[in-house]
Image (cartoon, rainbow, N blue to C red; front, side, top):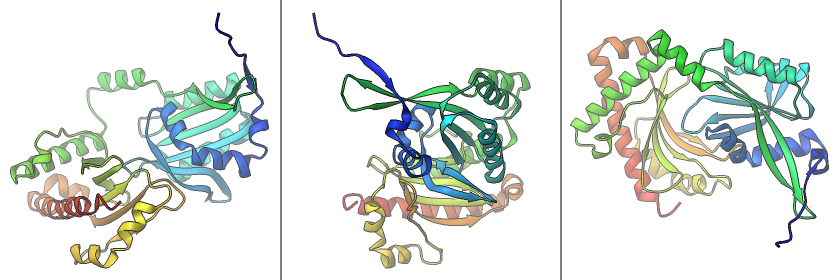
Length: 314
């Protein structure tokens, strides 16, 4: 018979002595583990972010978009104070994903998160996650995230089906991406031919290297963004490599303000250009929409060419 070890739970405070100095940095550095249990890829932008008179533990965004992600954690049992802070941060930052991480979860607070998901629309989702620290005999401890509460996708899908329509912003995005892809395909951009429009605020395109993409996004403050996006650039080697060619890159995009976004507090980085747009004009004015499509086509092509020219260097 094989000899088996004994699995035991460890008090999380044996692993993390202090919430601010130990627990929060660990979560930021291991955000991919939390992303995996949530089921949505997101990256860290900042820790201990000031929100009015308070400080949010971890602030980030959904990968490939501007959708804000907030994470509030505690090395203790869930309490009303942290629930209140969570709602305050969600409101102040207009969060899309709201994640509460606590080492112990009460039934009342689990019910509160489930209720928040029930009464809010699909612009925001609330999650309650509990980290477990496990060990087999005297092996190294391992952390397992347990999802205690999450949105009911079935209920939201059912509500959308009953209502018989998408949210207006989703309908706008799907129509915009569909028209743009049709325009690009007609102009011989082969990557656009087989793409299908989605309701998301971003449209990534592959450039042949894992973790690197050229993405078009509907950014915050009614701006269209074309970016070279490095999804996993923790040491900023990729960003620094292209920044060393700053003059060359800015010459390629002459007439545009190139935004160099190293994103030091997170894992990702980007090089981007932006163009303001008016949603109502995009939806109703053919000439205005065509002008925006021409700008996007020109700069997507430049960004993809840039990505392919440096791909072996980064």
